[in-house]
Amino acid sequence: MAICNPNELKPLIAKGARLLGLDVGTKTIGMALSDTSLMIATPFDTIRRTKFGIDVQTILAHIAKHGVGGIIVGLPLALDGTDSPRTQGTRQFAKNLMAHTELPIAFWDERLSTAAVERGMIEGDLSRRRRAEIIDKAAAAYILQGVLDNLNHHH
Image (tube, rainbow, N blue to C red; front, side, top):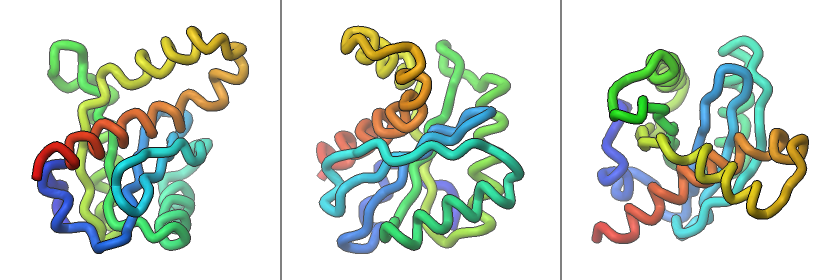
């Protein structure tokens, strides 16, 4: 299935299926899952990146286990909204992932996600080490929540 617009996701997702949010970094992939009513995103797990083939198997196993019906990939655009070098890598990752799954994949502009999450954590006074452990999956949840809020406001 092609990469689609997040607003067009709802009809493509089976009833009762969850959305998986991915924050694709160079070293890690943060993951978040929505609930089955597509209202709330929860930080889920962080994968240490190895080879794409191995990473994709891990992601597919989670998809099967948790009844995922669609995938959201955070797109790290430059602050002016143009592609950054990281954006290219993320687009390529999504394209490669598409070859392994029938699920719809949508990009979500994540420009502010990691910064917003980090700010919240600093306010919450989490230690730097603890922050590093959860930032990726928290960023994935922030990305996914943005999509869910968007879906729930477009009826």
